[in-house]
Length: 209
Image (cartoon, rainbow, N blue to C red; front, side, top):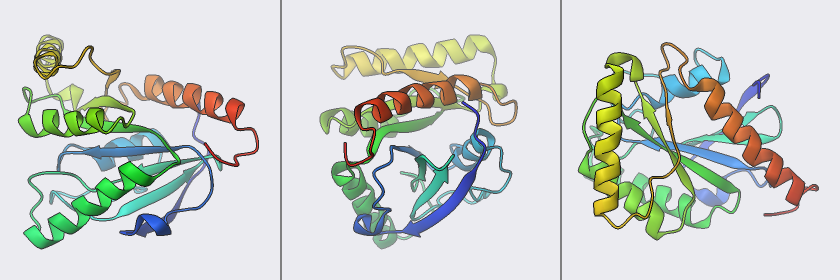
């Protein structure tokens, strides 16, 4: 799939104010400073579609972008380590939960993980929440250009071991990416395209999922 158009639609903290269109949505979420904005800009061929910042926790709203006029890319606030007040953090964690548990248009979430680090408890716990809540998700390992292939394989193996230890039957589908080198772009967009085709086939009039 090629992304021809990417348009910012709305930012808000109230799930009921998200777009009413019954188009498939793909939500991107990860620990603060995981490289989410850079990845989104790489995927959409826009240098400034998502705001990048050296300050973790910059994204504090649900951001909807309409892609190719037929699906939404949703940029969600990061979890953990964001330098915001406890009150602010609790508020946006609440609407993230509301989004995941009530948004019918969500067909897949992408949990972003910095491949440079070994398995982090906060990532394992968040994915456990997603699994327990039966929210479909894939893993996107980011910043693959920063370490060797050997370390990439080692860190992915560590995540598999941790997840199996937490009663996962299998590792969720995952992608290895680099926003700098566009690694994984084609594979990720192809996956979204395949899911979209299935959604559109089952809901030709976009009347609901």
